[in-house]
Image 1 (cartoon, rainbow, N blue to C red):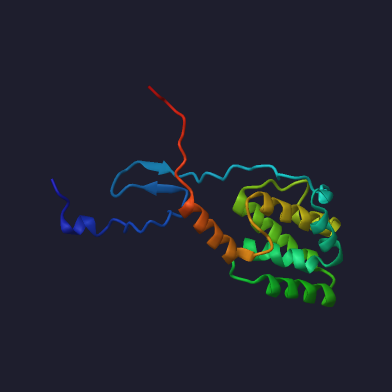
Image 2 (image 1 turned 30 degrees about the vertical axis):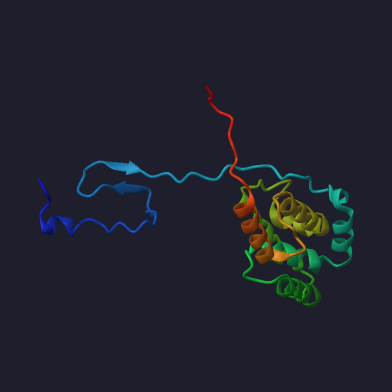
Length: 179
């Protein structure tokens, strides 16, 4: 009825870490089952690449000093592990030394798309940042803003604000089946 001690030793430990192969064989069973990872659904950006004037103040800041907008975006995407000032300073340093800051910023666009399941549109991330750096930064800024982030206060203050709001809001009532 129960497996012998030596039979249990051959089975892999259950760690909660996904299996890294294409197949999983249940302990001692002869049938193998395919494990398919489901990709996150791909959504469209909430605003277009050239909708910069939807937020005129951000458009002006980004055109005059893109390091500020980039720093704000990077702090949110990195979930507070790097500050706005640090990311903005590194962006500026790369811009001054090489002129290839778009290579650095396109990685953040890719990271943002992965986090929020966004389409790679209208073309590849590096192409968007190479051809339309300011437009790309403005679009990323607007996307995060529409997702509820206050871009001026940073990651930690946004999380604190979210925690307070969740604690003070009453539970939502769903209108489903009623009698």
